[in-house]
Image (cartoon, rainbow over all chains, first blue to last red; front, top):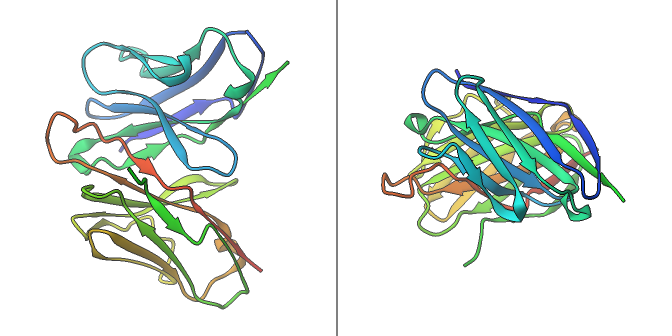
Length: 114
Length: 118
């Protein structure tokens, strides 16, 4: 079975500081990994995804994530936080052999202080 | 292009009433998913369909919940009778997994239906 663990339900950073949101996964097959963002009262929007190939993937809004198989991690980073980055972030894992259903982590709420 | 469309956006009902949530997936997508989001349990997959056929309904909490997909452009999630613990945001999502170069499992989500059962 696949699972995702997001370390830290709340993360607070200052504007301009580094953002680091942690995600570890468990999968018996090569995983497809995703980060989604959810703004208040909205649905989830894809930030970035890792499928195969380059392990450092870049997404929208300046975010990127690195797939590290040895550490079973897929942490999300952004060099400089902006106030508009305040939202909830979800890491997810998928096994396409089972129809591509996503298993989500519990989410991390990011706050950005001025 | 229109995204995934859900209705109603907000529903307030009394315990014991029937609730029907509706979803129109993105045209051409062949997978449809229903998720439920609560503070306590996060995002839970309830059921998903492939080409209108239910594939996995193991996440459906109990017999009070049912979902249908009569055609490729419409799905419903029904709760009968509703209970206060069903209060949550229900998301519909769709994806296209046709085996081509875009076979990456990306889900496109609707805006959600916020259900409050009093």
